[in-house]
Length: 470
Image (cartoon, rainbow, N blue to C red; front, side):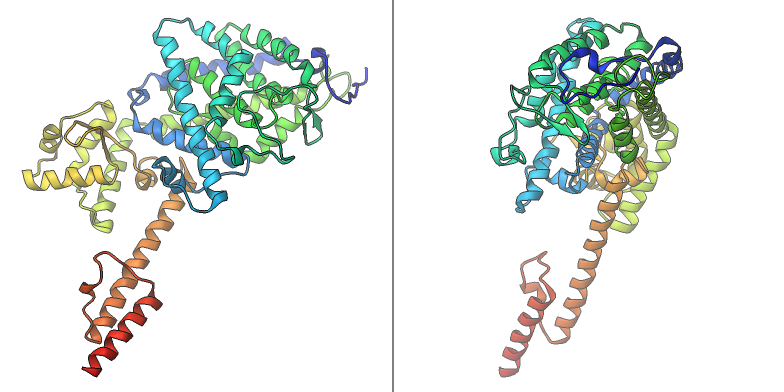
């Protein structure tokens, strides 16, 4: 039977199969079962606490990677600046920063909402069923885009994206060669999508189902824009609601690090059936299986990577390396004696009164106090009040030591900034030496100001001439 070609899809039978046949599904269920075991184990660790700074860092990373897939990412340090409401004066860069912040806030809000439902006693199956509802999809889209200003919601055709609004009549979408279903048929497609995937109750079947659901949601393309971001966040939240992430890993990193394959397999699963040996639905079963297998492998890889990174024994050496670099190279006031106290906070994800933290360093009161202040100033410790207890922090500059290769782009970004700072310091010292050779006292310049060399030379030359005239 040949695959039919439709000008635009309008019948729910046209996006079958939603699951592969049982014989083809069995290997995928085995991988899904492994993910349930390993994901649950990792999510039960102390690092999964809601106030964990590791989770904050990973939300920033998830935002970077999901936007990178869309070609709208910024530098990691620019994301941190945006989280402090320090946006670029460049309009386009500021737009990308706001997109990053929007995803971070949406992920935090959505995870917190799911945690509240769980703590309120709602059965997991009920929460998962809600995640597959059209109401939830509209809510996710609204969370992602509602905080953006009108210029940032303007689409290519000049119309405005309406956050949380499913496509309406006569609003059609084409992605590559795929023409999405008609707007009028969306309720039927989404109802079928929800019924099938929310109905997969067994653990491994539900996990396998969410991998297929990701593609079929992208295929339906319910919104005028933002469908990729919604599908990725939706998959992330399903894994969270099933108790498999604890906020400590996400497939988003894996998707972006294999971006070409991610996109190729998504598009491959869009295709029609390739002959009589390719399932019994209108769409390719082989393409769907390849996509599901990729997602499961990606998830298993991310779990294993983070399991190694969060190993308590190995972390002690990495903390020592970070502190040594701060003390010996950057000379920030951070001291190696803080290692045991920091390692304790990492292992327990607890808080310590400041006096107890200082006592654990073994340093004298004055030095311990200055070390504590430096650790807070540079992000190695987090606190909510000026005199409150402290907890483990993960500053971006410690990433290369704490979690090497977790976010390579951030490591490169921080290293570049450190190099620029060292070059600026060396340049300032050289300028000071040159000025002193002419009898100019640079201490009369505002403290901490490093002027551009041409400006500084002009100022020195003027003062040198004035000195000769005297």
